[in-house]
Length: 576
Image 1 (tube, one colour):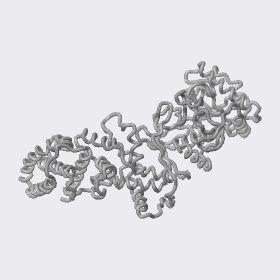
Image 2 (cartoon, one colour):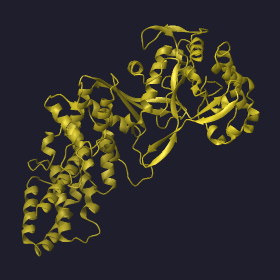
Image 3 (cartoon, rainbow, N blue to C red):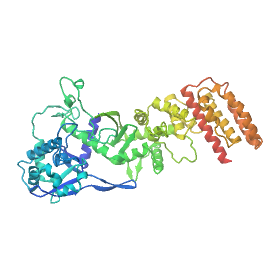
Image 4 (cartoon, rainbow, N blue to C red):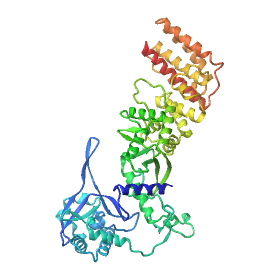
């Protein structure tokens, strides 16, 4: 299913001229060796372009369509017309070693083989270069020595002559196509992806751009041990993927990962997503929906409103097709391979509908200083992390599990809820808007909490013991602060964790402390003392006793009651 979707994506990209045809690829190139017909290097041309990255400018390589590059994990394998200095010049940063010589000889052999009978000045120039170039005398070339460190840093080099690049030469282009069509020892079979008979790929190209994976790329499909083989079929012959499908899916995935504006990082999971017809407006929208910014909150609200009322969704004059198929893929590094964390496919309209349900569950009254309307999925994950730690990373499997739950409108992972409770306890009852919203959403989706609209703000009707005791704890803390503004530690700092888990051991103490705090208020403002006494009497009338302990679910109710009451009390203070 994943490979089929990626092959379809490749064919769409190819129609729009965004990727190269089979046998070719898009590669990063930094320098061009300008040759004359005799093969002498006249000039080294820098192809890098200056790009703005935030407040700074950096020089980055450009993309060129070049002959398909090989996958190198070990051994010596040369590319045609586009490679690093080891293969093209026979040198690296240290000079000319034995292995580097082997690389250059492999490249020389490949180029002379392919260009042996090719006519034209460009082919003649490249042949002459490999016939006359001596790597041992490379440092004597004044054109190279000027930028020795830059050109030997692993960057790709190409050939150029008279402002024309070698890979664009018609005769060379045809020679490469003929070379690819040479059939030697081939294994044919039915491709599991396309269903057509094709030559089966022995090795699949690597995937680049997954955070944490090898910079040279990692394999999505590979077999490297007898334990993974079946019926004597070695390497990727064990998975009958034709050469066309192998090229197509790797090309499409590398293209998607290279578009960094459409790549999300959730913990160790790199997430890419695409629409079936290749229209990037859908990617733009999903990016905004998963992690809303302050500048797109109104757009999201309008789209959600149209979705609720079953009206057409229009973005900047473009009408969206809610039946558009949409794909989301999560990948994580695993040594020299990639692990698929999740793969999700649905119509774009259904994905938006599931996001709407999620954000409805997350809807919660918030402090006046909070300007965000929606809490993004990445921000949800951040609520589980200790922001004072050096390694601000969530547990590995959590981000992918949360994202999948949101997209599928399924149950949230238990670890999300547990991590939020742990973080609140670790920070002595620090309940942010985000943490309270996650608890509310979890209790609604996983524990069938009452109607979600009843818990957007303070629910004064419920008699749930844990929720009411949370409210009482908030009132008692507020009374203490009202009585004395200069205190080092509040009752929340000292007693919150115990009150949340074992109320019977704490609340009798808090009720005694309350009396002295009320007396201090009484001497200043009798009407405030009367208000708090009345509120506490009302709340205490809703419970019969202080329970010995609360379950994890009840602790969530306690925290939610505490948060709601805090917001209500500060709302009242602002009104006053």
